[in-house]
Length: 119
Length: 426
Image 1: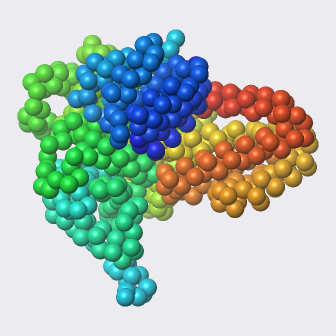
Image 2: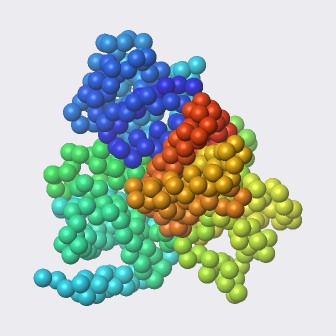
Image 3: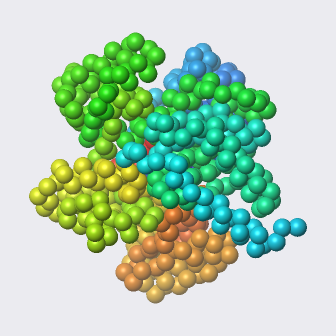
């Protein structure tokens, strides 16, 4: 089971995601509402999360910029994007994300993807 | 200054607006989706689930005018949601920061509300740049894809029955990409009139996920009709006011007695498998089809993800009380329960909806029409209750025992509930 940092400016989605992940046996180690906060929380976390679920469009700092900064801190960090906008997939993967899921997603796909990245 | 009576009068008038111009021409519950810009009143995005249902721009102007007026009357900047009842249609309204989502449907379901709320959030997130731009419309092909998946994908399972509409070949021109058109044609030519998704996958030798995508797209474009067949992991409930029609003496929907007997047991808590697998039903296939049609048309609804999460937490608290009672004794546990309930009700008013049953189990009193936000509050109230009961147990029997007990119970409830949370669309 994975330790997860959720980064999303949508408070409702954060709630649903974190609760579903908890039921799936995962641990939520942090929640950030924009990219800058994600970088800050990631810096403070020890141990680092097994995986980060990252939104793309967020205020202050977007998901791709946050991904680049986090990977500078820890190049081994696994980042999975979740976005409704498929047109940003390339940008997210270019920034160094391991994967990209297009919303809406089925919870079983989310669980399977986390399992794949965090064996 | 507007008097209170006048406000009530206006409200009643709005509720009485007759939506007869919207004809009920399909078995599908959803009719029309609009997303309006609050400032301009224009509908930058719209989708007709039922073709020729109503001109979205006329309806959007009407909704925008009412919303603006109601906003002035109530003094609220942020429209939460409200329902306008018509003769045979309702409007679900969900306000965002700068947009308003409106879904016209035959029946109100919690599931629809939940989806509409998600759509408005996602729309505002993706199209923030439209907030101050007037008049831009119909540039949302990616968003259209998102809406389709949100509304349709949950309905397309291996059991789902696909039925071609009479003039389906003529509708194929709606597909812009030849590749989609070819795949759809190949899949649909493989059967006469109806087939399940599973049958199409097996007979056409097309990957299952591809069949699901083809079927979803074809339905969105009006080429096929779908009959959802409930899965074992569904948790079903009657929609608001459905009971008076379903159980009417005249049986207007012509449901079989087997179907009625199963529907009568839906309580929004018990998994469907317990109704369908534990009893002998002679006409099971027919009953499943009828139940699917009732779900399609909104008489029956699958409970929302928010409610499933509430039931999951209810399971944890219930077991904590029950197993805790076997450690500290029922009387002491009842005292703990009472203390948390009294104190908690002032912090989380929904704590007062958590009741202790005679068998030392716990049940949340959940109203049928609770909105997703209400269910979020209920979830938090249960979390609060679990935390406080654990603290009482820690004080009386030691922190290690209490925390181990909660951990074990959480694990058990996770195992019980995971099947009911894995196939949800979020």
